[in-house]
Image 1: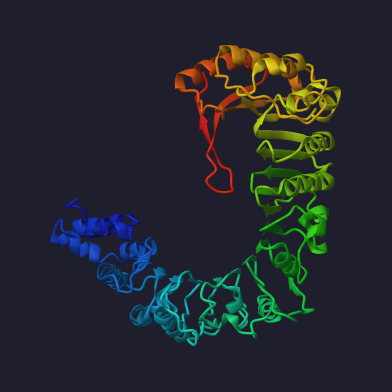
Image 2: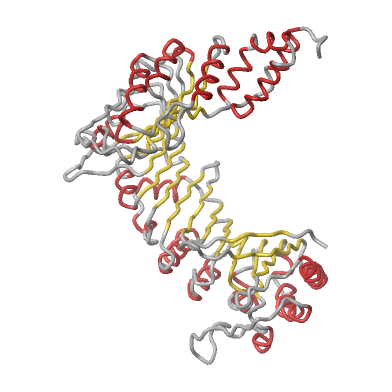
Length: 550
C-alpha cells in the first residue's frame, strides 16, 4: 500500500467507518509512517464518520468530572472533519462542550443529546440552540437522569425554545411533550416524537401554561407532519379541557403510548386520514379499549382499511392485535395487563373475534395455559372462518385443540387452517388420553367437573412419542386437514414436575420418531424445544431451541 497514490489511500480511509471504540486502532494507523498519518489527517470523511458512528459520553453515569480522553478525541475529530456536516450523539452537553461547538454550529445536521444534571448540563444546550443551527435536520433532547443529592427546589431551568427561525431546516424533532407546547410554528417539521420529561422537578414543564390546549395549538402549526409518536402525554390539569381539534391531513404514521384515558383524550382531538398506519399501546389495559374506540380510529380500522389480515398475539402480560389493510396500512393495538387479569385477555380476544370474523386471513398466537378459557377458545375456533394460522404454546394440544379438530364442528370451522403450532407436554401421561381419542368431550372436564388434569413425571421416550402420535396422526389424516394443512410445528415442553429436559440425543430420537409418523401427513414439520423460564417477575418468557431436521 506504500505505492498507492494519496488519492487512493484517502478513498480507502473514507470507507473504513470507524467508531470511538476503535480510536486506539486509529492511532495505530497514524503510527505506520508519516505518509499514512499525513494522508489520514487530510481525509475529512474519515473523521466525520468517526464522529457520526460514536456516542460521546463526556461524563460517566455517576461522575461529575469531564472525561479528558473522550473530550480530547472529540475535539480532534471535529477539527479534522473539515467542513463536512456533523452528526452528533452526545451525553452531557455542558458549557465547555457548547462553547467548543459554537464555531461549528453551521455544520451540525444531527444533534442527539441526553442530559443528566439540570443545574450543570442545562444552560449549555440553551446557549447552543439560541445561537442558531441553520443546517440542523434532526434534534433530539432527552433528560434521562438527575443528581440524587441535588435538592434545590427553587431552581428552575428554562428548556431551550424550539424556534423555526433558528432551525429553518429542521425535519425531525424528539422532545418532551410539555416542552413542545411552547414551541413556535415549525413549518418544515416532518417527524415528531413527544416523550416525557425526566426533570419535571426542576425544569419549566410543570408550568400551568403547558396545558393540553397549548400542546394541541403547537401541533396545529405543523402542517407538513408525516409521522407522530406520543408517549405518556397529555397529563391534564384540573379544568384542562379544550374543544380544539387538530387536522393532520398529511399524517401517515401515528404512535401513541400511555393509559387508556390519555390515549382516548388525545385521539378525540385529532383528525387524520383513514388510511393512516396507527400503533396504540395501552398500559395498563383491562381488555375494554376496543369497546370504546374513538370514531376516527373505528373508521380507519373497519372502514377504509379494507382489512385483509388480522394477527392476534396473546402473552402472559400483554396482548396485541395487528390489522393489515389492502393498501399497505397497518394498525396495532397492544394492551398490557397484570398477570392475574385473565378476563382482560379473554375480552380482547373475543372483541377481535366480533370485529374481524369475516376477514380473509386470521392468525392467532396464544401463550400460557391459563391465558384463555375453554369457552373463549371455542368462540375463536368457531367464529374465525378464515383462521389460517394458529399457535398455542404452554398448553398441551390434547387438552383443548385436538378434541375440537376431531369433532364435526372443528372440521367445519378450521377448514382453512394452513399453519399449526401445537404443544406436547409429556407431563400429561399418555394413558390419560387413551379413552378420549375420539374427542367426544373436552378433555379438561373430568368426572363432570372442572377438575385439574392429572400430571405425571413421564420422560420423553419412544413410548410417550408413539402415544402422542397415536392421537395426533388420525386428526391430521382426516378431512379437511389432510388437504389444507401445510406446516406443523411441535413444541416440546420440559417436565415441570422434575425439571426433566430431553438432551440432544433424546431430542434426535424423538425427532426421528415424529418425522417417521407425521411426515407423510404434512408438507413441512418442525420440532422445537420450548423452554419456559422461571418467573422472576410477573411476566412469563420462553426460550425456543430449534434442532435441525433429521
